[in-house]
Amino acid sequence: MLKSLSSGEEKEEKEEKEEKEEKEEKEEKEEKEEKEEKEEKEEKEEKEEKEEKEEKEEKEEKEEKEKKEEKEENEGKEEKEEKEEKEEKEEKEEKEEEKDEEEEKEEEEEEERYKGKRRRKEFSTKKKRRG
Image 1 (spheres, rainbow, N blue to C red):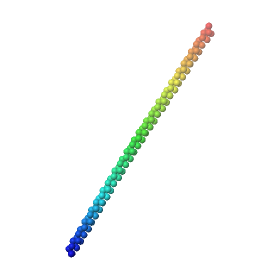
Image 2: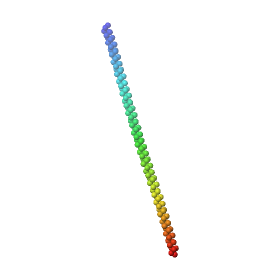
Image 3: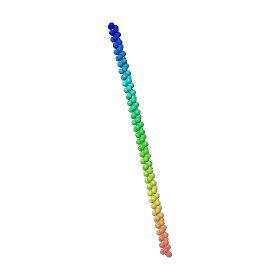
């Protein structure tokens, strides 16, 4: 009877030990799974952060490039406008000079005609006096 009791106790202890081992294995397995899930989640978050950072950098680079192109375009426009204004001014000055030269030439011709008329008149009056 004692032996059967002790074998019953042994059986019970054995079952308890197996249950305890199973429980520990189950807990270890759950911990391992939780750890893996946590690591996967962290990796995913890191990957997402990295992608967001890259997208942000690309966007900033694109904006900088567009700003630079716009600035260059504006500078080009300004230079072009300044050049056109300068050319227009020079053209206007040339026309003014031509106009002034033309007027001066006309005045000289007018003076020459006037002098010519006076000379002819003087000559004809001298001729009349002599005659």
